Image (cartoon, rainbow, N blue to C red; front, side, top):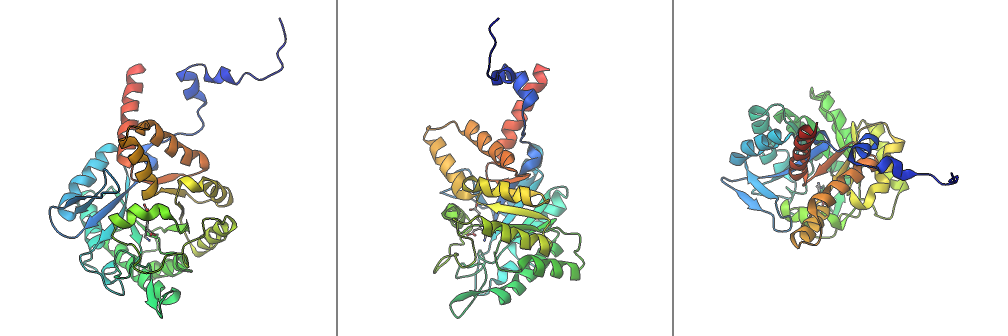
Length: 334
Ligand code: PBG
């Protein structure tokens, strides 16, 4: 027999069972976090035009939605609120009867097992659409922190399981940790948007949450997409300040950063597969240009391979359905 001098990688790809045996990364419903846009008013299921399949929903429909997610095996939701009225200081964000506070209470009373993650930011509640207070035409850091702390405490009081500050002010994790601890919430974890780039991929979200900045942009507080070391500095500070989870956002164009952060820190890493990433895939799928299911599964598996432990994604429901279907099929095979 003639000797070969190369490796036979195809041995381990021989058939589906062999490939199952050697697969390195797996996606499961445990990995998924589903974002929800809750809106004031009644009987509202308002489709977001730039995000086909995503709706703003009012509180009277929320319990049914949560039960559907639970049936699908989804264990966590991320809440964004859209108030009727906005003002200069984002009062709706820290109002004890605010839309998100009410939504949290409702979910925790109807479906207590569902983990509720509250996004902590002001941009949906301010008339100028920025994530902090405007003083002398600039987004002021330290005065904004107090409002973010108030928001986080009000969310924890309402029953939020996890606080997820996305405002990108300096020192927000430290300030919020202290605020929670001093108010009896030392067991409520912080899922920090540690690494958040100033990204055009948030465009459709700003339609969904009605939170586009009315002047300027977010580049003085969100990060420059060209930077990598800056991501490690941001994440390092949040770890020191007491973060329990680290989010990297957006996801798709920043898989290298997910890996960097995963390698450098020993906390659960969360990839945010943001609105623009969702809309691009959806648009191509609706045109029949790509196979949506295969593309989405490949994409989310890519996040896992890059080092994400959890994925915040608007595809969560679809993915849960696909995963459930395939486990049914596996069951039949066995
Ligand atoms: C609030 C916030 C934003 C997103 C999540 N939290 C918008 C922004 O920073 O402009 C974007 C999420 C997405 O695009 O899916 N600050």
